[in-house]
Image (cartoon, rainbow, N blue to C red; front, side, top):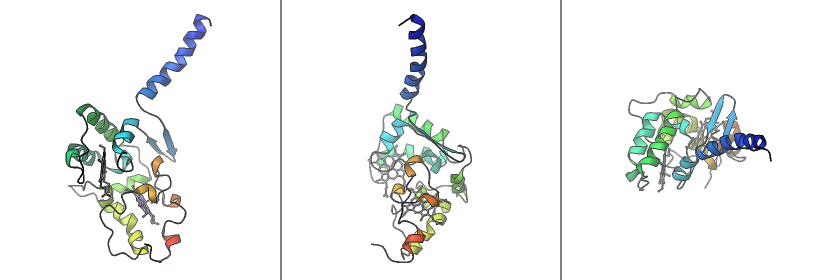
Length: 181
Ligand code: HEC
Ligand code: HEC
């Protein structure tokens, strides 16, 4: 291999290496929505549950969640300071209202001054899912009932929650008013 070939080789290889190092493993695009993944986030915050994409919550709420990891919904999910800072930065850059407008932006509607910690308690989220309780003939859904997004939203792992893209068998069209266990 000539020196010039070696140099071109590294010229291509190095940026890939650097890119991989920063953990940007995949990018999914749907309309004007872009989901930028972060490997550290997925490993640390996807260990106990679905790794909620950053655009589901405003930066203020992410800050509150990251500040209370020692008592995180009854679990200790504490991280070392460096990892925690890195994750918070990622969540802020791509948070709700910061990331470019997309179908998810409707989650911004009617956010109270002191937003809840749970995505599933945001007013717009509850509005969007009112139909779930209705179809299952439940008066109220238990806290955490809707937390495993990927159970119903087939492309949740790509950060896409369009109602047309639910798992087959899920959604009002299929439940049709029958009770589910
Ligand atoms: C040790 C396990 C554990 C780890 C690690 C963990 N969580 Fe959780 N998380 C939970 C539990 C338990 C709940 C409550 C789930 C329920 O009610 O079904 C929860 C709920 C949540 C919710 C609310 C979901 C909703 O209902 O809207 C968010 C947001 C969240 N976690 C973010 C994070 C972030 C960010 C990290 C990484 C810093 C993280 N979690 C790491 C256990 C964990
Ligand atoms: C039990 C099944 C179920 C779970 C779990 C669930 N969803 Fe949904 N979701 C639905 C259904 C059904 C609709 C569509 C309602 C309708 O037809 O109007 C919906 C609608 C939505 C919408 C509006 C989509 C649109 O096209 O307007 C968003 C955003 C959404 N869900 C996000 C989430 C997130 C985030 C989670 C997890 C925190 C989650 N959902 C958990 C069933 C579910």
